[in-house]
Length: 327
Image (cartoon, rainbow, N blue to C red; front, side, top):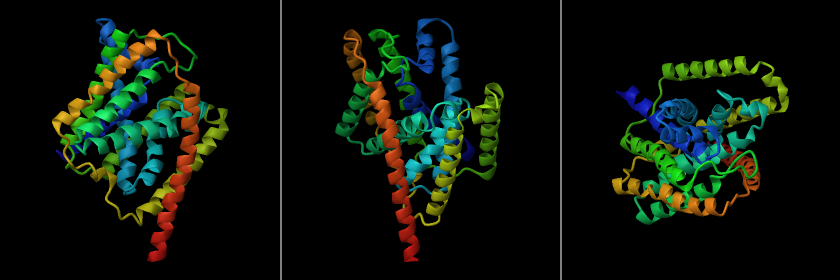
């Protein structure tokens, strides 16, 4: 039973991370697969969604295990630990951190949007069981979603969804997100304590998928952009050493255990304001063909990730030094 609860925790976390990682980007492949669910009688879109959710469950492991092992108990340590998830997302089954950038989106969008906003901050808001806070957060996310929906690597790409299609898309994908929150709320009093055999299993599975990706992309992938590979090794080394040192002095309550407060069922329903407000705003965006300055937003996220990483390392090491001094 405990194993089942851990697996459900992993899957529920994956659903939340997947939503913020994939479905804010309407002009990308995963979103188009969802669109296929209601544009045809084919089950390919549903199969694609399930397959992607299983991948994100694996990626979620590399958020939850570091949080557990390093006894993460504050925001700054969480920021550093979240990088493991970002790296797994963009470097295990796809080679983006090797071919493009270590920062975008691995250490920027995935850390800031997926983990800090979607997994951490939204749950902190939900456990307040405050109707006002949840309404404000849901509508704000919905409005941002509507304007971000025109994102594309190709500037001013034509919108691929009509307002009616976007409404269905938003409701379908939000249902997965809310399911993740509901599952974690159900599991809130169970401790996530992975066994060594499970850690070994997920490590071997991750390594196998990474080697499979390399076999398809070519081993030269690692030296095509040596700067990224070197930066990856440096980041992992610094992050592991920092968090291991933090683990030895951690005294705060673990972040994994901060969400034991139950979330009222009506508070979960309020989250539907996110797809509804997004759909209303998307009509305006679509009608007037408004394209947000995605390049500027990406640059800001890219830059802020470096700044926050530097601040996080400083704050955690200050805590470590102070703790050692007091011994």
